[in-house]
Length: 311
Length: 254
Figure (spheres, each protein chain N blue to C red):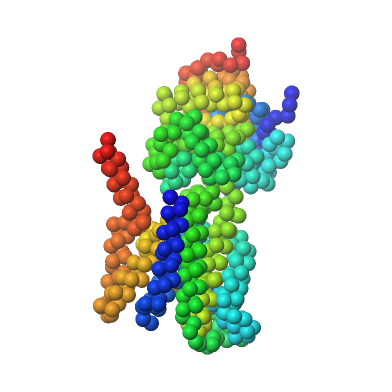
């Protein structure tokens, strides 16, 4: 079983690595965006799905990574991927104190606190000289898209592997316990604060690393797109649609959302958002916990029926 | 005589103007079963919240094995050997029954696999083993009460705080739970039970009984002494214990 998982993982990774060679520019950019969103969704799923702290501000770290990379390249003459790595390190370092501070808040307060944080950084980026103010920073253009894609793919695969590990680990069980009832978890010996700060750090490193790739991909960073709430909303919608707090949810929801919305946009450019929104609502009415849990429940029923048939 | 396992000294807790606990002193010895009786609102749950570290007292001290624990976090207190259950069972609803218990077992076991095995053993001992794979949210009230106890036991406690574990159970289930609590004595686990009703059982299983009334401890003694105490009957029932049919004491008289 374990070996099979590794082989499946390697095949998917190889296919995703090779497929851009056979795609045109438009399909490549769609692939990049899909992988980016799925990776962001996986990162969001750790703090919000497993730990139950809904965040609307993980884009803070995404923007931080994008700007760190842009500044490293334009002002520090570093290779872009070193800047992107630095973005991940800074995000992690910031997430520790920030986690201790923000994770005292629960529910809507935490969600809005994180949203406010992203907005604050956007304002800072807009008015600071180092970040180029409202006009942003330009990176040297060239053949940036493919390296940025491989960077994003690698981080996405790592995040997926991390999710697989978390889902089967003591750490993951503790996260789920505190999601279900934080006080009970603490009286059962769970180090609640440390555990959730760790989850927050993981959910910060990943967008921090991805932001650098995004800056390199666009060759351009400016406040509005780097700290766009849209990134969080996409991650939220994809994860909830696919199944929040599950291993497969972000992947299923992410692929479905980006492909279907793209198809609809091509077919009905005027009305696609309306149709798409309607589809999501209908799906969630019938599958309130998302697609992945519904599929695994159906599989379990099928297996149970098969087992009975054998008797 | 060795030092008591738990010493509660002059503990008070106020909520606004209301004194939920008012200068309560209490001690529990190793392996002793103490029942705290008192009507709803007498302060039993507040006391459990303070001992388990979920709440801090306004004043007073709590010592466990000689060390003051009032400033400790709940997880530190749990790891040190005080486990509690909740009056209204609070299972991790979306986790399976085994994982509910494994969370607590992780305090002693290094890997998740071993914690799950330890959890299975505990479930066996409380009669929930066959439900191990079910989501905890699907359990009945009785099963939830047992799960509360199983999770607490997985911490391998020296002291178990049982908040109304008998409330809502049928007479047969109450007897099963009572037998279970009496077993704790043999395993050297002390227990504090908070009980509003079921005096018959309390009289039978307790080494000692303390009575809380409006946040004050009004009596503390063997079951026989409590029954004989006229203040208790008046405060608790508005009448004497004999009249409400409390069983004659079987302990402390023999």
